[in-house]
Image (cartoon, rainbow over the protein chains, first blue to last red):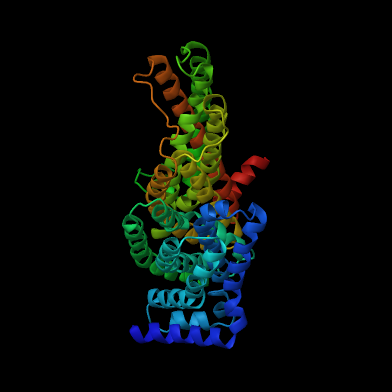
Length: 222
Length: 249
């Protein structure tokens, strides 16, 4: 079971390394999307500081959702997805490995880029630290949920937009607690509640999403 | 022709079709009579509210619509799950048929809510916990409908919809409580629905009548939609042919 997990995980990372520019696109999208906000809202640091955490979180959410649409599509089109499901290893393990690989390729760079982006939006150092912490807990949730959406919409004509419509409502709790923690630290409240709830969300999602993804993949390939 | 009634009797589309045919005129009748009575009592008999004036009367549509839209989502998830687990075609069709009505009632609740909010709160929309969670419920309905219509293969569509509906149903309490918490964090003393200590009897009566009217309407519309789905999917079967032959003569 562990060998199947590591094999699929390593394979996805290797594939991403061979297509480096493609793998970096979500993070570039993230940076470009965030930098549109000062242009739209106005450059006043006061305003930017207030909306910074929310903007970073929303853009990270969108970047994850846009990049996750292809998580299964390429494997589906060349037939390797069917082979993985036929291999006898549990589909749940495969779904978990794919989600973990997606997080390593897109989620982790988002977490790394977030402090720089936060500085552009004039965030406080404590706020930045909390933002990175919440993204670290929150982006795996997005990868797991996104994997489920990608499996549900596998092979459909409008898969990309549909996936976003399906998954965004489900990711609202992560957004609320992620962005809320930064607001809490800026107003001097303890953030432990936010972090606990984010951690709880991560645990629930990692228990529910991989089996649901595996089921959805089997339904899609029937 | 007269099989003994079992829990699965109406799982057969042909029998469900006949049941719906029998029930629908009654449901429509009940819906219309109760709606007329409820609206009459609500708009002409019920007393004017002491603080809100006449604008409160929209709750006779708003509250029943809000109740029913929540229950329909759970019913939809339930029937989708039944259809998926027991391979019951009719249950999946019922789940599909429920979605548009649920979305319509959610929209109605939001719309009437904002009509009430304008004179009472002075704004069409506030990011209150209730309003926000209803907006999210509408998104969930739209996602369900979009997924079902995007999948051409009927069987795959039913199963995928069941997975989505179940995940959504698990998420609804999480979303609701996170939205509530978010709301209390962001706007401490926000406007809240302060309930009158005791509602006038006539108000309660009108609300109950409207609730039952909406339920009857929802059943009637959902049954009709499920009938249409059944006819479409079972078009190659004998019972649909026989029915079509009867219509033609």
